[in-house]
Length: 300
Ligand SMILES: [Ca+2]
Ligand SMILES: [Ca+2]
Image (cartoon, rainbow, N blue to C red):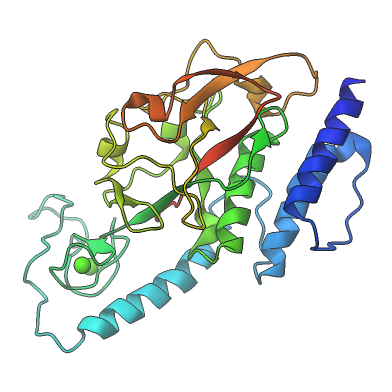
């Protein structure tokens, strides 16, 4: 009976999310989770991405990164191409790797070449143009969709949902997105890239200046804006403390993929908070329909 209830829950979710896509996939009850994730993969494939990951692998990130990185680099470079020879001007490289040792030359921030730990290099001193000190801004949004905590399909399924939402909203580099979500064995801090760049809402407001600020327990603006720039005042599945570590003591909805149908709980945050409760506020029942935080990932 638990399975039957999951089936109906899935169908409701499915009809809400993929209502007129006619993807031609038929879900068989024992394969609900796998099928749900597969359908999200197919949504991504419909948008021209055929290399959907079988795990949270970087192989899916690389092709997407290269194309978008090229695009953003060319536009930003184009915008500043006329302005002087700034090869050694501002924006010094923040990677302080030893200057006089034997290894390869350290990256030079400002030379227009993305290298080393740089995720962009627009060669200018303009901080709020999406590339600051050779670190690119990352978008973070709260999902416009809601999900039952036990039916996310695990961390991978949650990540796929973020990618699907980002793709449908037309966000760049949508395949890179991951959910701010932990299990006891895999923390958000371990899963997500610790960017030197800013974390931004899609409406341009700054959430945090970098990863350390994001995980400091205080945000500049709450992550209450979804991928379509709409406000969402809502509880959010996280299983994660503001530090990025798992919210120990909660049940994580059986790694966000609970087949038991039993009443379980998991850690939630609140989207309007700017203190540590943005990530962990209280535990919520896994049958509740809550949102996800989705975070764009920069290069490894
Ligand atoms: Ca460079
Ligand atoms: Ca810049």
